[in-house]
Length: 405
Image 1 (cartoon, rainbow, N blue to C red):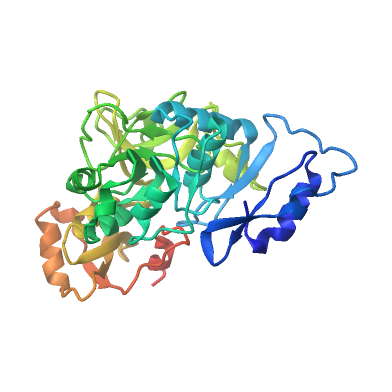
Image 2: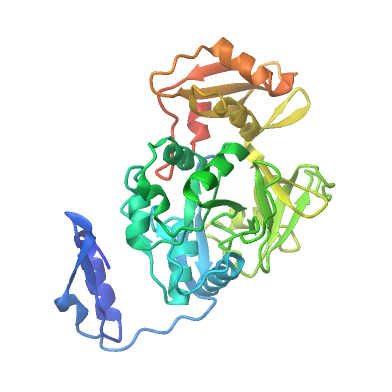
């Protein structure tokens, strides 16, 4: 299945294949319609078959989002991908009749690793959308027969909740949606009550390939905190460490160290970054900070680079943003640390806020709102209002651009 713009690439892939290929071309006027390309389906076989790749051979290079630094090419093998697919299938209890609804681009790990690869292993069907549409989302879910989705975030959840109720909201067959960045426990409950779909938080990175952690899908365990990301999945090992490398205590924030058969092979043409990413005994330094309770349940705090050091305390930017985003006039926000010139207090906290359409909101009112929810040292010193936050094509906030303002 392809689009006309990729015709040349598809022709070459068919030529290299040692068997007939059935190719469908998407109608650009209607993405739900496809035509059979008989000429490409019977391309001439190559003079000799290409070498069959081994499990450890490179399957793809996937680039990090580059929200805090230059994107790096993550090298991933065939066995990394296959292990990831098995972890996803077993962790979510997927079967051949399950259909993932994919609205994220296929170069994104959520769609490719957790959606496409699992369907291939299960010999199932993929519900592939041209993009995320609030008005058409549930109709698309019904039409595709989708039973779950690996791509949902708090902002998208809120857009769906804000949409006027319709009969199609409950006609779908979706059971759960895996994602994160949810705004509140109330948002999670409201989504389940209205659409009948359980929001399942988890944690992963491009480098982990597999879902590193996941909240139990088919157990009635409540999500204890909005930042909950569950337990390590099948075959995944996680430790939390302090800055000095010692083990973090129960309830204490620590950097996630990760080890798994699905772990990436290294960064493309960057041996220095690869060395820095691993401990001497082979654990991957994720750069993410989390807490673990006495039962082993993990709660995400923030990216280590986005932790703000102020007045001798470590403050998670995500915690400040959650308090800001709870205000009904705030659409979204980003908090950053700006070094103090004297350096006595470390960093001062500044926040960038996007208001909802036609919302009236003054900085003083918003600061009072946050002050009622957070300790004094966590309250931003200044609020900047923007029409929009700088983001990557996948919607991640580019904080380095805010720091350069």
